[in-house]
Amino acid sequence: MAVITEKREALDYFLKRLLDSEVKDYIAKILLFGSVASGNATASSDIDVFVFTLGETEKVRMTCADASFEAVLEYGESVEPIVYPASEFRYPTSDFVSSAVQRGKEVYSMKEEEISRKEAQNYLDLAGDYLSQARNSMSRHDLRLGVDGAYNACELAIKGLLLLRPGEIPKTHGGIVQKFGEIYVKEGPLPREIGREIRLGLELRNRARYDFLARIMSDDARKLAGLASILINTLDGELRSN
Figure 1 (cartoon, rainbow, N blue to C red):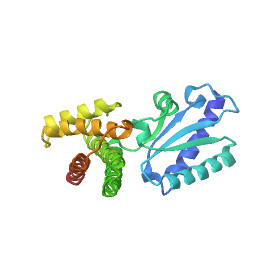
Figure 2 (figure 1 turned 60 degrees about the horizontal axis):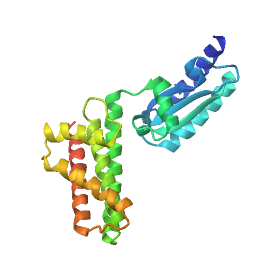
Figure 3 (figure 1 turned 90 degrees about the horizontal axis):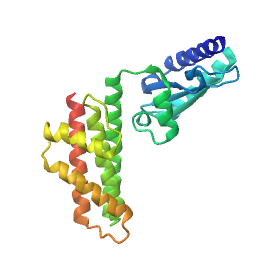
């Protein structure tokens, strides 16, 4: 028990150093995982934490390294931060992250509403980048790349829109599209045709990405880019109105 107490004191010191720094507003959540979180730590155990960020990832990483070093000097304990974007918390891309999210203990969190809004803004910015790159690809007649980028822009905008509504975000693509349809098509401002276009867009993206015999037509690619633009503009409008 004394071992855990000492390690928690070192963790608290690390958290204070980090959250008193200039990067505080970029930190969405901090999650304790591993042996300290489970209560099975020994004297030689590290203190493992995930730091989920909403931007300035490299600056957050450097500040975490400084705070970790100070904790070693002050307590002789090693805090081992792993810095990931906040999207990894909602949509883990590895079993390692997924397990930590499920079993870890949250030791800091920004207000959920603020996290959602900042994440939605990040999705808007990234969707805009993907759409711009997709249109550049289409202008060079790289239609497969253009379709892939345009559909990615659609999906990012949809995720951003869902973040602005209460409730848990589905983990699967099908669940995301279904919930989007319920909120923004069935009950919301977008026409029912949008749902069909999203489904057709996914089919086109899959053909562009995986079917080497597929003929990707420029009209279809431009139509998908137009759909991405509608979704991006809808997300931008929602952010401005809230």
